[in-house]
Amino acid sequence: MVAIALSSIFGAETEEELDLSGAWKLSLLSELPIGTTGVVESLDLPGEIQHHLMHMGFVPEARVTVVRRAPAGDPTVYAIDGFEVALRRDTARAIRVREYEGQNARGK
Image 1 (cartoon, one colour):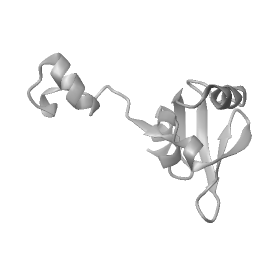
Image 2 (tube, one colour; image 1 turned 45 degrees about the horizontal axis):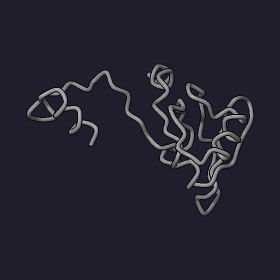
Image 3 (spheres, helix red, strand yellow; image 1 turned 180 degrees about the horizontal axis):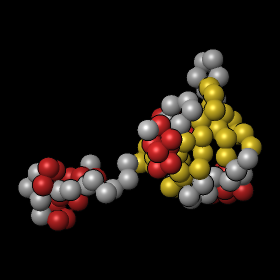
């Protein structure tokens, strides 16, 4: 959807004509696999909950790692700012993250 909006803004006829190679791919925190690290981009939560999570370290540019999931898949434990926090899937869906660039460098 973003590519469609950008292509109309920049006058590209197809998505292939619009080079998005330098753009970050955003994901939902709830979609990251166990063991991966993301960088917090934004939180889309009600004010009180957002404020509480920000005090726990969920702020833009913070690195968050998926540690483990409960046997039923919910909640999930995340490591951020030196401690672990369990979040329900609904809460984690409201946190947008991008891929942590240092992750690829270690894997190669």
